[in-house]
Image 1 (cartoon, rainbow, N blue to C red):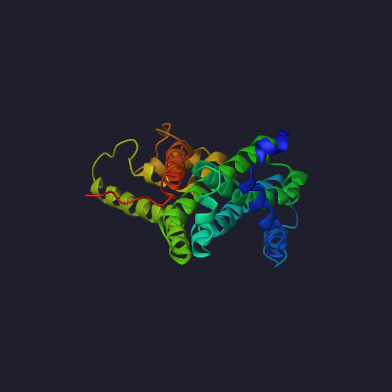
Image 2 (cartoon, one colour):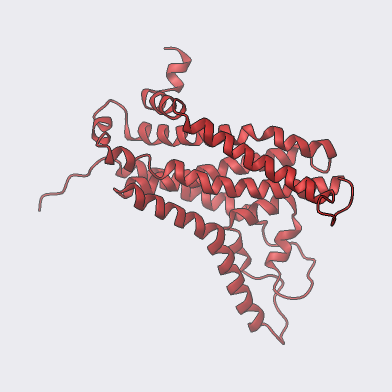
Length: 291
């Protein structure tokens, strides 16, 4: 057996062919690159005084801030696109009445779920790799090391896997694609915006509670923001962010109990693997037990 046949099973081969033979994939890639490119050149234009309110020059400090800006913007685009690519891949087969035919083949449930997840994430990986030339603008002006760029792209892959795992789980559990898409986007909105709002709420409560007293070195409320992917990404750039997030009031130079990304990565890794397991477990119809 050739190595291609070992790596690409019939389900994965079919998903690759179906995804790339339509015009929608190149158009989506083009729109994504245009969005990232416009953000990069727009930032440079504004920073170099395009509107008469900036310094006439682009230095390594501007380059570093631009890298942070592009990284957070790309994380937002990943959070917007990944649920749309994965939330309908099982429920869509069910609505087209092709899922039962797929389940009668010799492919196992694990092969079907993993192949569909890999094919969807492969397109996102293609999109992310295609943005590498845009990031090369940052290296022209310095301020960023290659190791930081590698960390960011590895974090992108991790978040894509997490959002994709939950998308395929909801697509397996819900029969209607519309419902699975809504629930997946709701989950994405919660981990990006809901965790931030919960952190602000509990931090305000703790600051009021410790007013007039000696507060502890750090608050447990900082762990809530560890579940926010954007905050975890920023903690990869600036370790001082974790210190300020855990601090209750006043100045405190002690080391934080943990970096934000050290909360985000292990917790979401376990949850994502559990989501894939649930998808494998429930993709096949379960027979009702006789009483």
